[in-house]
Length: 178
Image 1: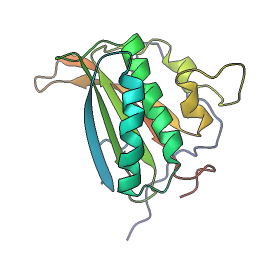
Image 2 (image 1 turned 30 degrees about the vertical axis):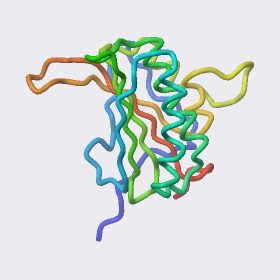
Image 3 (image 1 turned 60 degrees about the vertical axis):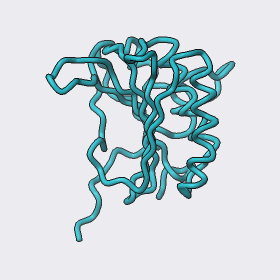
């Protein structure tokens, strides 16, 4: 049996290389085996973020994820809220929330899809330190909970770009160890 592939340290504190606002930072782990998985289409409304949080808490409890469920629920709320505030609705006026666990490390992947194929300001959002400076807002919570943020464009079956997926990878433990 081979050891799991090496991943960048969650606590390294090194910001990713800056990229243009419209350049994607490819999503890791999209085809990884999954410990559990859940998907919710959420109405593209201002209450979508809190709705995501309410759905995540009991579901992660039932899935028996070993990480901090309140932290994961807050990150889901902020990712969905960010999609509603800065993205575009998917057909039917939805935003999609997907969550799954990685069996090797017990890390949690939270993905949110919207119809805007760009992520302006990604480099600033991904490079946040997680240190408290004033009132915490939005995607800062990913860094605060020692998570990693990335994104990529979404394509339909014909290869047409139809939006983006924003992904947060959260460790099961505060220090990032499995």
